[in-house]
Image (cartoon, rainbow, N blue to C red; front, side):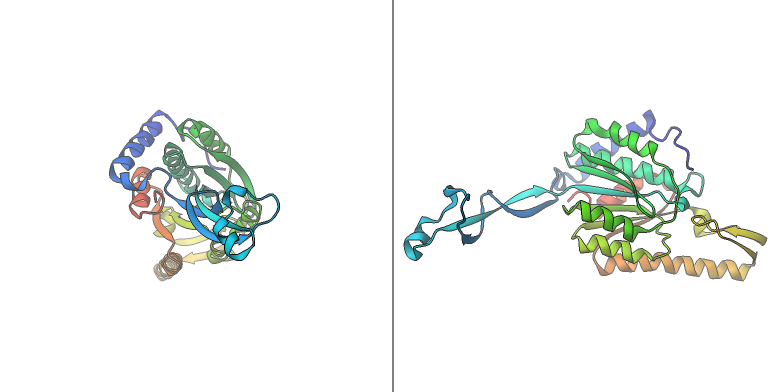
Length: 295
């Protein structure tokens, strides 16, 4: 289980405020909850016609069409709605690895993204998942709600294997409204990382991927006779770690990360790869520079 000590202290809050100010200066034209979707409603932009049915608003009848066709025709308009932000934090057992753990790092990044979203009056949702949806913070709006976010993130714990497909399917089926889905994870999923992301794409979310790793996973300093234990299912295996085995591991791990990046490129998803000793505030700025989180 990852520690929650001093995750969100005064120094962290100062960095969040700095990020908020800097983001407004650097990306002023992209702020103010500009992720918007069109929906049929009572806005000002004309969209289509349809036959009048009992209960429709008489104010939107097209009387000229009535004179021509002798039928009651309703004018439909489009209105814009802000798209919510969904931040999915991987809380499976493998995220507890490292010092600082991937889980602690993910929660700090999630808190920073929430703070920026709340500051810009976006509706922000936070979801913890592993092989299921483990918890959800209902939509929050306004910078003052950041302490609710902190409390939710601090109370999250790691455990279980990853099954993003089932987790995202459950959540998206119950929460049909599309938005910006940010997934913070190591993507160690026995079913493959693609299946979970396919679910988010199916539900028309705009997706941003944050692939988090620990340096020891990227470049392990191991040698000799060891017993390696799977970080999610606790299956152990005796291995003899040789230079050639380490080289093969690095090739496979880099291929794994490249596959994620290629998937994101193919479907035009946002993607950032990071390690836990990279300053979280610099990572957040990298996210902003891709022009997705703030658009």
